[in-house]
Length: 77
Image (cartoon, rainbow, N blue to C red):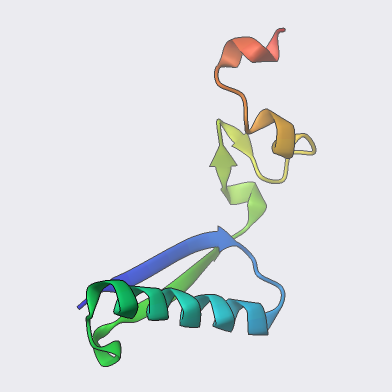
């Protein structure tokens, strides 16, 4: 029984959240052949201040650029 967990920043649009769960479930069914009634999927919505990429929290004003850095040395460059 597949259980699909998706962690993401909050999705404001309820329909988009539902569409995501529907599409991911459909992909799992299509690729694996597992019956739909055996597939569970859920979203875990995380506040940006509780999520980090490359050691930079999502609420940081420079998150889009700083979260793409490859090393801490880039901070001093």
